[in-house]
Amino acid sequence: MSPAAPGTTDPDATGPGTTDPGTGPAPVPRPGGPARGRPRSEAVERAIVEGAMKLLEDGVPLAELSVERIARTAGVGKAAIYRRWSGKEELFVDVLRAAEPVDPALPGTCLRDDLVALLESLRRRGLARRASVILHNVHAQMKSSPKIWAAYHDSVVLPRRRLGLEVLRRGRENGELRADVDLELLHDIVVGPLLVRTLLRPDAGLPDGLSEQVVDTLLQGLRPAP
Image (cartoon, rainbow, N blue to C red; front, side):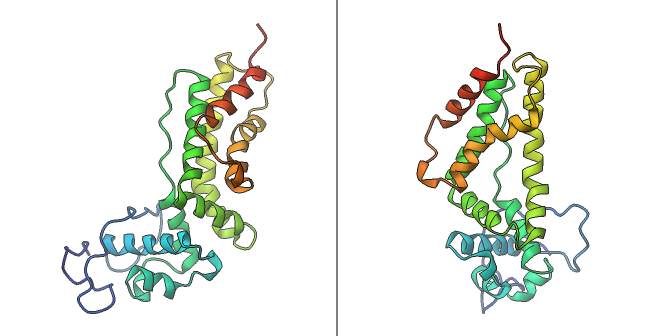
């Protein structure tokens, strides 16, 4: 089914004369996922994901997010959700992906500039209310919902870690880092301050210039001796 045209009734929506839910996050692809019956309305899918995000932004804990509540917020029937997701855990995985900003474009000029770009992306993500709320929810659910944490790790954390490690690896090969540096450990040290301030020390803030300060402080002790 194509998205309903503006002003027309969508069969997945609830209530008489309900119109196209409008714009929102793009539908999230599910590579290799099972076919789900009749073609989906992208507008309805966007509205459902947006509805779940809104509830999280409003402070509703993940444990209290019911399919019924999400459907009511999105202006659709519960059946519209179950046609697309098996339950709220699977839906939340797509919400996680949709809430994440795209990976930053790296300057590629030197190790410092690339690291600053990576950290600046983390800093801005920590300042964005939506992404920050999602991150806090995921962190809180790591033990009680291992499926959600595994999905977040595989689709968000792991690809970005690989990108960071590649930047550090190039820096070591180019002689911008000491040859004996443990890159896995160094990556944790690089991103650690931004994650600590986002999750554990929100009172410390994420001011402008923090990314440069972190990178410059670290590189002073990591460059090879002249």
